Each structure stands twice: as structure tokens, then as C-alpha cells.
Amino acid sequence: MREIAYEEIVKNVRDIIVYSASNLPEDALQAMKDAYENEKSPVSKEVLKQLLENADIASSEARPLCQDTGLAVFFVKIGADVKVVGGLLKDAINEGTEKGYVEGYLRASTCEPFSRANLKDTVGYNLPAIIHLYIVEGDKIAIEYAAKGGGSENVSRARVFPPAAGKAGVIEYVKECISDAGPNPCPPLTVGVGIGGTFEKAVISSKHALFRNIGSVNEDPEMAEMEVEIKEVLNKLGIGTMGMGGTETVLAVHIESNPCHIASLPVSVNVQCHSSRHTHITI
Amino acid sequence: MSKTYHLTTPLSDEDVSMLNSGDIVYLNGTIYTARDAAHKRLVDLLDAGKELPFDVKGAVIYFVGPTPPKPGDPIGSAGPTTSYRMDSYSPRLIAEGLKGMIGKGKRNKDVTDACQKHKAVYFGATGGAGALLGKQIKSAEVIAYEELGPEAVRKLEVVDFPVTVINDTYGEDLYKIGRSQYEVK
Image 1 (cartoon, each protein chain N blue to C red):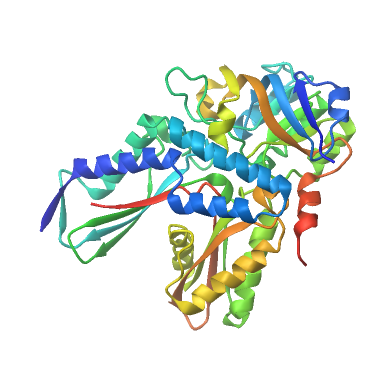
Image 2 (cartoon, rainbow over the protein chains, first blue to last red):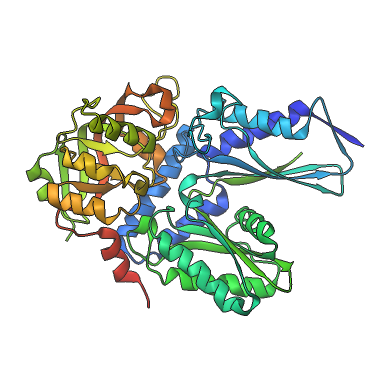
């Protein structure tokens, strides 16, 4: 049994939150540079240039890339041979989240659903974090983190289709989602598609798909092919950067597929803006 | 063809009437911030026949909830939020003399109709360029609803704040124009 101190988890979580807020990860930055090279619309190209300049300023002056510093979302895999000492893993992640948001001068965007009251006075600053926890083999803790903004979350959707809808139905559904969203989710986008499982499994898969590095190839050849096909369909929509019109609406489509019930074909589309602040660490 | 203008607030009918969708504008002077929660309160004040916390005539409202400033800075990162959430409130403020709104994303017909009827424009700022846009804000002061935190109403002084005209006073929409040029049916 390997012991990992509660405080070590707090510190690691705090650090990745502060760093991610002002440093676009290499994969996202490269994808934006590629979009700038490939974009045919002069207006969208100009906006992409502004966004690359923004990434430079954010990184060199340690300012948040975007004022929407998101809700903190974690996918955590804890090895069965790990014992967290000094407290609970969930509490450590929440404490690290609060420290990161306070010490990094990040915006607390969490509020009660109906009163819209900010929770910072009652339960903490930008808490609770959204934590998906899995137990795996080994003696390490792997933490995937993303700051998830509201604009792109607001256009995300899920639906359970009858099996007859098939691949064509899924592609049409994703297309409809991105077309309706237009400029609102801050394109160019990463589109996470969760297919199969149960209703909630599809949704969580679509979220997790956004954590994958942009530019990586799906391990499942059938899904890899479908990702390319959907990306082509979406880039024909002409939405462009920030909806100004253009050829580069989508940076990547990421699919996670699961076996599902014989009666169902669940599909979820989770949208990520161009400011794809995601990272991972292993403790 | 897109033109570039430098304008200082408050804006007049003449200022906004010369703008067309796609024009680039560098704004200078005072602008006010408000998001959903503040908009609701502003419209409630108008309904109750009370005075607004700032003079809305000729004013520009920026839909933004900035990050907290670091010590020594006037404001943190400050890019636009998605504007449709303000659609149910904006026409009322436009009727009272609001001349400009800065945000990102689509507006509904009530808003664009009000822009045509009362001469007002909807500007887009680049979403996700919060670090860059925050640097064009030279001072920030909370003037109402401090308890709303990032959603409080702030009075900002901006210098060459870069925006693009999305909806003009003639019913044009840059999002529709831009997309139609690149959509492959």
C-alpha cells in the first residue's frame, strides 16, 4: 500500500488549476495555429490572430485566458493500492480547487440553480468541483482536469435514439447541434460525442472525450473514421471563428463509444470552446 | 467593404447610423458592465419608475463578468459573455436610449427590431480573448449591486476597445452574412 498525503493532492490540484487558467495546452495551441494557417475567411483569420495574441499575453503575464474560468471538472483514477492519509480524496480535490481559484485570482462561477446566489459564502469559492472517480489497478492517482466554461456547455445536448437511427442519425444530430449553436459556444470547437451506454454513460463519455488531446487518433478505427467524417460535415457549416463565417469551425471531433441496450442508441454532444484548458497529472 | 472607426461614448444617433455590420470600431470613454442578474434589476427599476444607477442615454453596456483583479490592476480578464441571455431585457433599455451593447453570439428578433426602431447597435467582442481585452480597460469601479460579485454593474474607462458591428441599425446581421459566404450545402 502506497501512502499519498492529503496535502500533496491539494497542492497538485491547486497548481494545475492556476497554470491551466493562463496557459493553453500545447495540443490546443497547435490546433489554433493550424486553424489560422488553414482559414480561408480574412475576418475569421483576423480573429484567430487575436486569439493567438491573447494566448501569448495570458501566458507571459499570467492572466486568465478567458474571464470564464469555468467549473472545475475532474476525472480521477485512484489505484487500488493507494491510501490517502490525512483526509478524503474528494475533500483534497475540493480544497485544491478553492485554493487555485482564490490564489490564482480566478472567477468563482458556481451558483445556486434558482436563487443564482454565489456559493462562495456558504460552501466555498467555486465549489463543489465536479468529480468523476474511478478505482483502477496500481499505486498512483491519475488526475485529468479541465476548466469548463458555460457558453459551450449551454449548447450541449443528449438524446436516446431508436437503434434504427444508426450512424447517419448520430451524424445528423451532431450537425444540428453545432449548426443551431452558431457563434454562441466560441468556435473553433472541440466536439465530444458520447455514443451508447445508458443515458448518463453517454453524457459522461462525451465530457471525457473532450479531455483527449486534440490531434490524437481514436484507438478504434471505426470511430477514428467517423470522427474525420463528422469533422468534415461540421466544417461545411461555414460558421468560422466566433461565428464570423469561415472554413475552420471545428478543431476536432472526439468520440467515446460504449456497448448499449438492444433497444437504445444514446447520443450525447458536449461542446468545448477554443479555449480548451485541459491537463493531466499523475501522483 | 468593412470600415474602421474610432468612437467615444456616449454615442449619438449619428454615430450608430453610420455603422454597418462588419465594421470595426475602437471604443473609447465610459462603458458599463451588466449580465443577466443586473439586467433584471435594471428593468425592475424602470418598471417601478425609478432611476437607473447610470444614465442610459447614449450608453454602451458590456456583457461581461470579469475575473478578480490582481493587486495593482484595475480589472482581471474581461471578455464578453454570450448575449442571448440578455435578449429579454435589452429592448427595454434600447427604448430608454441605450445605443450600444457588447457581447458575443446571436441576438433575437426583438433585440434586432429594437436596434432598427430606436437606432442602436450590437457589437461583438472576441470571446475567449479576456486577457487581451482586459488590457484595454484602464479603470473599473463598481457602481451598483456589489453583492452580485462578477455580475455587479461596473463603470469602465476603455481605450481603443476593439469590437465588430454584428447587428446594425439597418437590420443586417454579420453572423448570417459571414456564414452564408462559407456554408457548403
